[in-house]
Image (cartoon, rainbow, N blue to C red; front, side, top):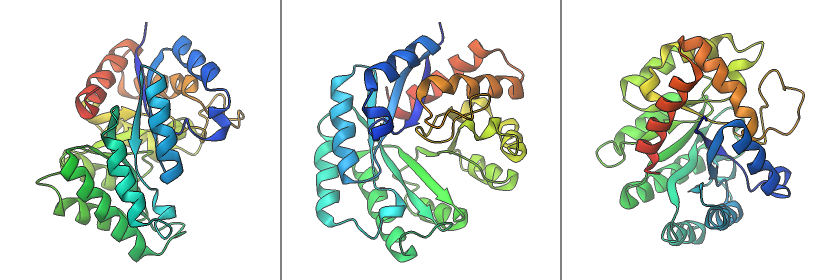
Length: 257
């Protein structure tokens, strides 16, 4: 049996939370047996911790998405630190810079990212990075914390080959989603070929981005990650079992689970 780990899911979102028992049961049946549910704001951080306490193989990451950087307050960060002590919190994230949508001012995004990197370094936790149209500045900020925050994963990766190589050259990790299965995902597939298996992770980013051949299923869920895994195995020229074993090693070492 496969033991894949969905390293980035939003299981607290209503689309999945309302039927979470069924969602997890389907996931286990498909060979995805562990999950990291990722916080995006203060409310979802609270829910992520509660969910992790309820299910044995479910873990939480706590962060504030750059989209909400203009809305956060010091009390939100204080509460985030308190939640870390509750157990089963395995990372800070997601956090980073999104200069594509700019839903929050760029200065607010920078400030929040730095504060969360500081928390990660103080708490010795890895960081789940969201970076869109902002890689150069993201890398510059990460470099400032390089001596204290060494475990970095770029989630839902859809950058260029050159950007991919720059990340790998820093010994960071890259996590792929169903984007690599899309008809217009040629560059993403080339990125998969570029990233060493030892620096790779896999995720759904559910409830978004259902992979082919179930792209029409509007609500993505962990069970569907098997399609992404099969595509990675094909692109890397390995069997699915070998891929799953290496991804499990990567994920366990990175998150300490």
